[in-house]
Length: 399
Image (cartoon, rainbow, N blue to C red; front, top):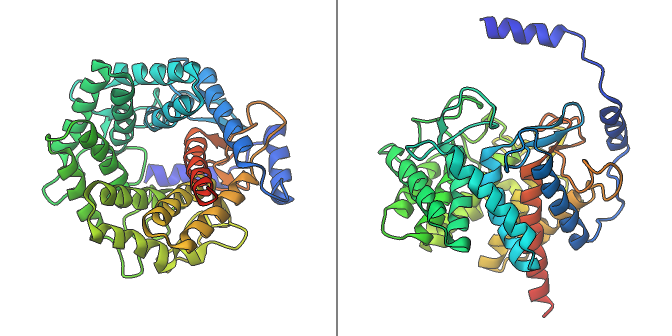
């Protein structure tokens, strides 16, 4: 009751005056997309990478992790363990592609920090590094596991391998018999089961690839099978949002889809590929407008349920569509993925204030409900990943 009263008071209280930077960005976004045509993919990728590097350097906690966001209202945030974890594979890939030792050094600082904050039993905390309560959380552990697995392979460092086994073993052993994780839910999202924890299963799949024979892949596939019980005939997933399962964010739709695809890639199970295709063909593709705009929330009939675009979700879904195209050869997946990425690129500032330049907003327009007024580190990561894959597919097609 007290929480409801506090929320009501906040709604009735006059909105605080926005800083000029936030007001200016809101005004610009109200005029429409800043670029009439999508800028060059390589230019945008390099700008997003530079922003991610700055996010590591400017983190308010100055610990080697990556700042959760840059806010037009609050400035740079403290480091975010979860997303730092899955930023690591992106930075390693770019370091290898570009032959840049400075990026390898950045990845190792992220890895060393993750190892330092791991709980003895193997889990990792939810929220930012200074968030409370500081307790081990399933989802965040799975995302950091992606980075530990990549680091163990790239750097052959026993510390990263040991941390990987601790995290993977903890996830394997805390899975409920029916394949759902319930014991260590995040305190920073609505209570309840989460279909999108297929993205945690993906962390187990990567650990399985590094060190087969410990039951990591089997546990991950068990969770994916549980998630499939939440899939409707039209491909939509119930229990699939941080806050509103009746109209999930495209961000969490991207999570559940990627986890299913990674399950297929590990196991070659045709039913998992069919489940992923059901998401795309059942209504997701139709929700993507010709200019690449995709509403930030989609209801159970795949209808738009938000007046903003969740740019993170658009990039994630584009990546999944590119993966589906690579597996099936279906051209509609490629075309719709390109439309999504073109839209996201049109939102990126390539000049102007350095804290915004190359960053990806939580929402377009910037005052949308998801990551309001913020440039998010995971949005930049997912954009880079999808853009690299789009370019690679395009080069292969024209070879």
